[in-house]
Length: 323
Image (cartoon, rainbow, N blue to C red; front, side, top):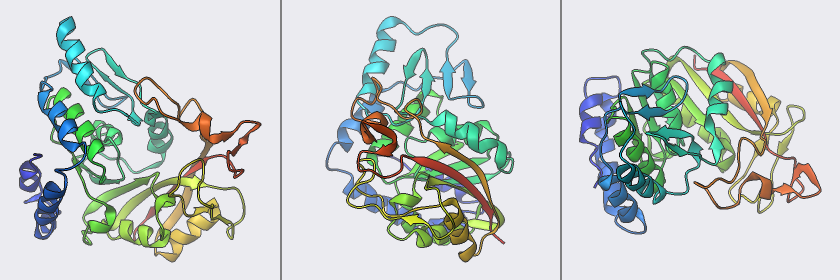
């Protein structure tokens, strides 16, 4: 099973040390509960991967590793076969020893939209909520983060993260914990907190914003990326059973409403950093994610709408500071 002991040792002498009051028991409970379903199959695939030490490691402009020479064909095929057992791959892409994991999302595009607008990450302790496979954790490390901690309760994402870590040489500057934000105490220890693609999945968006605030130090920065709609500060879309075929979408605010929510939760210096339409170039079906994707979720006669008739996905990045 997954060993979190090195993470406990890492935070024991850090501003996160008080997390040790609750974290080990939570992760022990997760270990007991993760014995069912496909986790064992995924975990075994990760265990069978070799831990490679790359001669060239790229985390600043992407997530890529390469050896001094190409892998033997048989070893490369074996590694790719194990990585394919961890499909679907949604956040990426990853380039690992000439194996190109072409993920559903071009998460690098989102990172390029976000990075120019935020505080420098060098030397920072960072939390990424709903981090998926951990792609952005590695980009945070590439930007100089001292420690990048991701949380996501999905078992598959933990296995994908640990698989990539092994192929990147076992780098310990990034860690993924199988938890939801609601399981975190008020740590007030992170310099920067990211929540990207999470808010619209929360039944109580203001509670989510407050939970994010509770993790930040005074003066820390929140980077919030989410679906939005056009309209004034009073406009909020409450979809029916589905939005773009997703069942668990509860509230999609205008940018004005979103910024007002942050202000009501006590954030300062709230600003809109970016707004962009999600395209079928950024989110699409690939050989590494073969089920339906954005093109299947848009109205066949009008791509400005979802199949349900709602405005098509528009995403905004809002940045704010905790007093």
